[in-house]
Image (cartoon, rainbow, N blue to C red; front, side, top):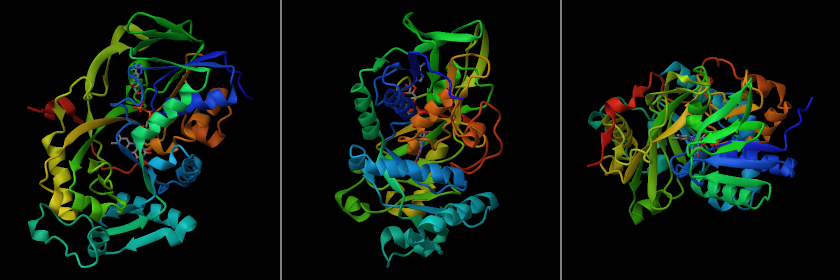
Length: 438
Ligand SMILES: Cc1cc2nc3c(=O)[nH]c(=O)nc-3n(C[C@H](O)[C@H](O)[C@H](O)COP(=O)(O)OP(=O)(O)OC[C@H]3O[C@@H](n4cnc5c(N)ncnc54)[C@H](O)[C@@H]3O)c2cc1C
């Protein structure tokens, strides 16, 4: 049975999950007053939603996410304000053909796509075919003896239905859309210090400047910062992923302008097509954590240790650690040799809220009435921009599809389901390896 929502709701976090939820509430319930609170005015530069570009793909090993991603992508394509920032150039998925779990994710992704779009798949069964897809039919592979490791870009397929999107501009579109609704207001510039709770229920939030905002329903959609505001019991942790941008010449832009996003599931490299004169590269690894001691979100007299984002907003001279730069350059040496030694224009660590299975957490707080959470995006939540808000609202009303509600419950998650395939291992403590720009 549907739960009645109160007259006013506070949403903490104006990334695409928070913005999408505000729009969903405003459309379904025009009389509910919604206050979106963020540390910054959207598009928030150090939020996960604003990292120049994002992949829009339905290549999931898990058919549940394939279906959700297809629905969301269709809605992006139907949205005239998002379409100018959407580039359907395909995505190439490569693996080295050796390691079992990754090869299985790769095969499942291929099979799921074959079912729906066989004519839109280009198979690349050899390292030559992977390389020539980027550099032309006559291009010769880089000799293996000048690489630092064995060839990694061996077996691939390109799904021509996949796309990349300008994440920042689309966040701006959603922000400006929210501004048009009289029922949505923004409180940006001052972080929420804590959620106000007493006698097992919430009454609003306290801002860092001492102001209190009152509401009997609060949604925490604060991405990788959510564990600062909620005690997540380790269900999700903040993980940082290294990203770098390389400026391209006019000739390079012309050569690669129609390329697909190209990713290697074994090494974790993601290479984006040229956009605004630059190429973005990132390493989908388990990445970094930034462990700090903070007051317990539900009992300020206690302290907890947790990982929280360390971003360019607070540490503007940070650059990515040398180990990850070396991994990025090793990949480029094999796949994009002319860029392997090119200086990065800029780099950053982008933070996600990661669950072990990569399933989201979209659920009521188990003990505090009126408190809801939408986090645990696990590095694959952007593509649902058009649908996530309605699903979060369904969850707040208690009407979310039962299977999704179980999957996204406030509960320990199972093993990695390959939703956001990355390189496994343990995160490195960022402060031990971080460098500063001189
Ligand atoms: C490197 C990288 C690559 C990715 N690639 C993809 C991809 O290709 N495709 C895809 O679908 N997804 C991808 N993702 C994941 C995607 O970016 C996220 O799932 C999505 O952006 C999550 O949005 P969000 O609104 O939950 O979080 P965010 O955008 O991080 O928003 C959280 C907001 O909360 C605010 N906030 C935090 N603390 C407070 C506080 N105390 N008070 C007030 N406000 C607060 C922040 O300022 C921020 O604006 C990737 C993520 C990363 C890092």
